[in-house]
Amino acid sequence: MKNPKSILFILIGLVLVVFFLAACSGASPEESAFPTGRFNSQQSEHIAYQFNEDDTWIFLYYGEHGAEGTFEIDGNLWIEQGTEECPFPGTYEWTFDGSRLSFKLVGEDACDPRRQNTDGKVYTLVVPEESAAQVSAPAETVAIPEISIDAADYSYTVPSLIQAG
Image 1 (cartoon, one colour):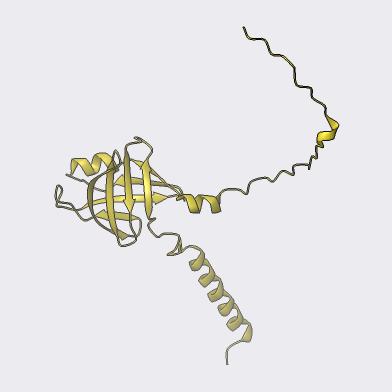
Image 2: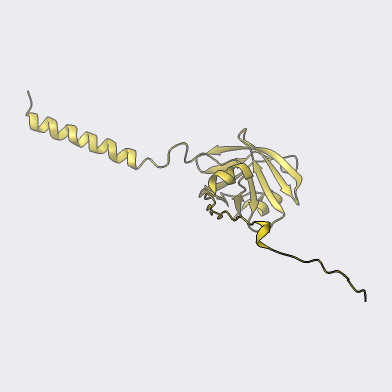
C-alpha cells in the first residue's frame, strides 16, 4: 500500500484543481442569459428593440413596428436570423451590464439597416412601472402633526355695508 501522506496530497491537489476550474468557468447560465424586454437606443430616442423570451425581436422606429425577426444566442454571440429585407444572418457580440445592452459586429454584415442600428450601439433596458416600484428605494415617510382648530378661538365680523366702485 502507498504512503497515506502521498494519497492525502493527491486528494488535496485534486480538490484544489476542481475549485480552480470551477472559479475559472465564467458566468453561470443565468448570468449569461440574453436579456429580454424593451431597450431604448442611447443614440436616438426614436429607436428601440423589443427582445422576447421566445427568441423573437421587434425593431421600433418612432414607436412604430419597423421590422421583426428571430435570433439565436451562442454564448456571447447574438445571431439575427434574417428578415424579409435582409434574408441572411448577422452575428454580433453582445454584453449586458444589468441595464445597458451593447452590440459589436463579428465579421461582416451586408445588411446595412441592421448594421447601422446594431453595430457599436448601446440600448438601455426600460423597466416596467410595476418593476420600477419594486426596484426604487422606499419613499421616506414624514409624520404630520395633528392640528386641531376650534372656531370659538376666532371672531370675525361681517362688514355691514360694502361699497361698489
